[in-house]
Amino acid sequence: MTEWRKSSRSGSLENSDCVEVADLNGAIGIRDSKAPGIGHLRISAESFADLLDRVKRDRFDIAAVIIIE
Image (cartoon, rainbow, N blue to C red; front, side, top):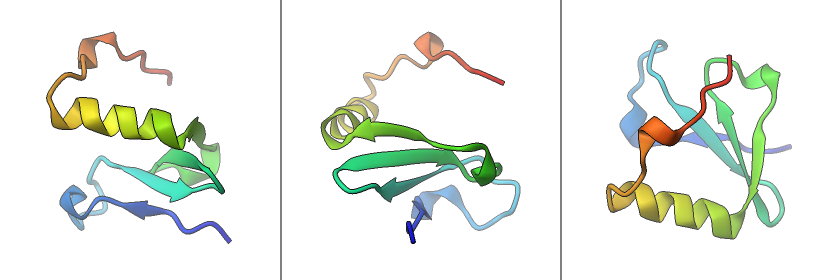
């Protein structure tokens, strides 16, 4: 069974906006913690590391992100 986890900084409130991540045998799964049954995004571990690096260095352009609802 896949173990999904969320950041300790996301808070413990049910209404906290966060994502969960999981190790998917060499890839990383990312899903919405409020709607885990909808599915998840699967990206390579390398791409996930690059994403984290950009976020940590504040080089992630949030305006460029496409939101799908």
